[in-house]
Length: 398
Image 1 (cartoon, helix red, strand yellow):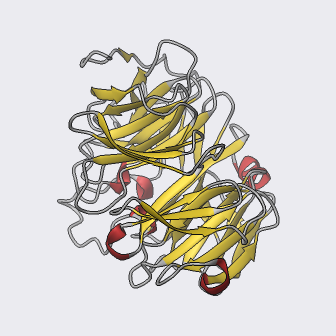
Image 2 (tube, one colour):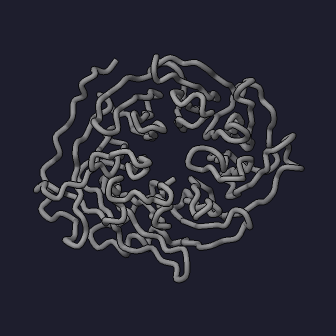
Image 3 (cartoon, rainbow, N blue to C red):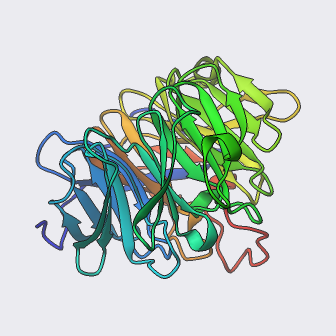
């Protein structure tokens, strides 16, 4: 097991021409943690609900636990999944906030106790199956949905019993399944809504109340027109969703009415054209601020630089120049971004967020205007607001 005291790499020397503007709040690299001693990637970073820890999945089928404030190593699970870990999440029934869940191409969903670092539960989709995504929802968050090969499986988590198999709505692998009531995708008064996204280009909306089947529970189908990589929700009541495709397009939809709000087939070109100092090779994720009702597409370069690009999906559609640039921490493709602006009023210690990539590094970014080695800059809109200076927050991001 990894030592409790982590080896923290000092930041590399600042570039000759730091990519920040004096009109933006400057941003710097706090530290960089090497998560391994080989060539494994960082796949995903996800926080515990109370932000006392964050879980990190690696390409070695290992999951490690760190402090999101100090970066201190807290423990790991090295035995469990026998194939690629596709998603990790602390979402689940409110009675088990200490459990981390994971799904894998080995066809299982497992639950891990973050106190004892032991596996406490395992569900299997069956032989030769792969699980690409999972989500908790339904009444009491006890309905578990899993995206598999061309089908969506549902279990009663309390009874550990499969209750439905939706297999007629998608034609290819279901890459992401999000219940409207799960974690950041919870929609008030719509806890039974389930949206699945697939590489067949379809977004399907299901009502999971009562007995579940394809014929009676499929409410709508949206055809994106290309393989879907990732979706997320936005809007005052999460009535809209953003969709990133595997060919780097971005679209925004009203999922209730199955109506398009904006479509950026040339999203990567638009972002690259607005970035005078670099170009976008891929998109990692999107970030939505409920408080400001703003959406950013997070694009990266193969050399390890990251930009937050404002997306205007209302009125005149546009992707503007980056309001944040994280540079100097990674040496390769970035796989995951964890914004600390999601800490729900908890002190963020000035930390903007964490990133993880194919160089096996976890990088922590923070605002420090007094630091002369700043190599990144950030718009004040994206900086975590102090709970003392902003007590009347309407809603927190996500």
